Length: 537
Ligand code: F6P
Image 1 (spheres, rainbow, N blue to C red):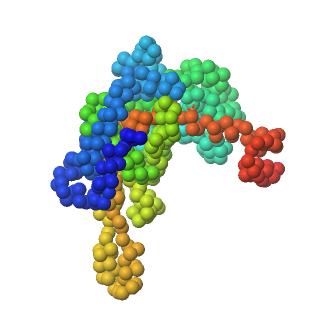
Image 2 (image 1 turned 120 degrees about the vertical axis):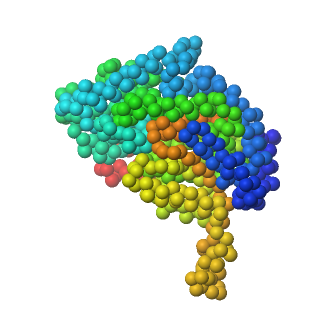
Image 3 (image 1 turned 180 degrees about the vertical axis):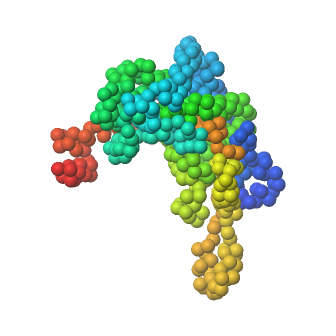
């Protein structure tokens, strides 16, 4: 059967023994030719094994699979999330000037109204017009999980140097330790709790919200007065007792993992202020325009996706490391794990047939330089190739610590250089001989110091991390996921794979409590449940 990757697989087979360094030797302009730039974002993919013929085949693939038409359908509000019958329009929240129609109805007036209410509320909290029962709000606790947590957490850490509002805290895990550890350091009388849940049914969030309400009720007379809610299900927020003036709704055409731009970003807006939040939106909106207008061969989201396809579907590298050399992007790998793996971790194509190729890769990572002292050993000398994605800002935000930033940058460039270049046995032998080793011991020791090199990496470079550049990075990755999904032929916007575990967890609660025998459950699960029951007795 013809596979859409056949041409690329055939090409990869013909170039598999070639070193990436040979590509640089053959083409002095390689770095310029295999990089692309848009505004504040520069993407270098020259340290990969993609050559001119491979790039052409990749672009052809994007054309053949209809990326441009699908993109236009998404922006036009068509219901491209076919298994849920929904449009995909999270971009509307950062393009508030545009008219957008869903089901023949302009959705923008209501959106602009909510955005205005969010801005007013954020300013009220920041300036002290809205107070807690013990005075000015000093702390905001966002209770949510998945997309209702990871986006605001990631972005609030990234925007630390722009934060001048109340302190932000996040509770996500159903583990009571999380709620306890966050709440026990706070004063209920000056804390605002935001319950963020698209569905307002998620067990973790609703349980933590009840815990926070009880914590507040122990100290203030009207706990609901210090709660706000964000959801698409405003009937449920009312049932929870949160008054409509502090409920910020959004439509179901914003997916959970794409929702940081919507009211789900309220905690971030309170922390950095509506002005910087607008810049976060503006950076993403700029990336949207680029994605819609740039030719595929110069289109950053398309190129990131195609490099990903080359590494995963063509070369068979099952994972990708995301390595931000920027401490404030510490939560970006976790954010991208949800964005990419929940979107493109699917085993059937859009029409329900088994996917004839691999789904998206495992995405993982940590900020540099910390990762260098942890898992880079495997990246450099392990037997499997891990394509690495470096993210880097040319400047730090602390002028008095620029010497440290320079060290950070040097480390980042050194890592991609080391992955590319490696160290041969001859070089390792020479180094060890200089240290005085000879004979069999020299040979043995030298072999441990060989780096195979020829390991691919890309670098996304920005000048400096701001809400604007961050917005562009997040939108870049969102659209990258979209393009990969189109090429793989899957629906990137549903997440049925998370349902089974949720259902089984509910069914296991009575087994753990001892009120059910757990008929039909496997021996391991029952054995563990028995032990846990005994330990808790
Ligand atoms: O775990 C699945 C999921 O539905 C995610 O897609 C979502 O981001 C998260 O749960 C939280 O959902 P909600 O915002 O509805 O509470």
